[in-house]
Length: 425
Image 1 (spheres, rainbow, N blue to C red):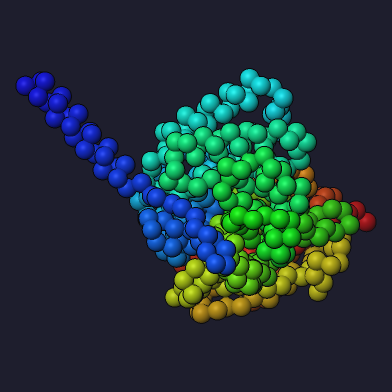
Image 2: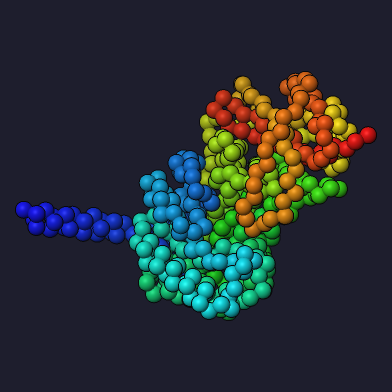
């Protein structure tokens, strides 16, 4: 009886395993008269994607079909994506020289490659897998070109063991030297992934000018990053308002990404979530409390061609004492100042406002490195009206940033902030 049970269990396991593997996506790239097209299971597949580790159901509802994650350290991302009918460009995290990895250390290189090959064999038949993202921004602040040998060895291994999923390597920005190195040393890479923010404006022109002859994906894009931002006289970075960002996202998707039908296979917007990067609101399409910003509405319009039934309000401008960020805002301790803001209600009857104050962070980190969020500060609000707030700046010298949040009854939110300095008399 026990033997019969074991046989039945093994048979059931094999059946389930075969059922699992039968769902493997067959993904290929085809060259056509004008350029390239991606196919999944023999059907054309244009990537409408987001860089995401959560809110997968909302990604799907907004009209996306794919997510991008940066490493293989959490298989649940694949499982969750499959649950919601999303594919995954799965990152294989290749260590970065700027974080201390030595590509002249043959043992360290061999060990890294062995671990990644193990992950490839483990996950290559997952039904959510679309393609492999080999490395993310290994070219950022690097000098040892041997990293491309590692990229090629991994890509070549994938070609051998997994013919169903293309290979991508993702670079920070776009320049001719990187394109040259990848063309020369990484022939097994099928697609170039580019993380571009302000540089997206010229990406379709430059990728051709620099000699890339295969397809590409915009693997990260959105608004200009903190590393591209204007700064005031004490080095505080100027973050655009959510309203400005929303308009910029929409234009970049429609007139740049979507327009390049010949070489661009799609894109992954950044970031379908929240993170601290100079501020807590710069790149995130969600807030730290989980509320979606108007960027989510914009991406639904990009992907589905229609706005959600209820839209977020939109903060367009922010000023202190009548001047925008172009003036260096300097006050004395405990001075009363006026915060003005201009917003669009969209289709909202009731709106709710929140005002928060934080110390300036002056972070010099980049490339997605972890940044600690500062603690919120208490401050005195004197008077509030529909479009302005009178408040007292802190009674302590320093550098600060004041935020205004406006949300509707279902917590769709828009945000703007402006930095200022407090001095003694």
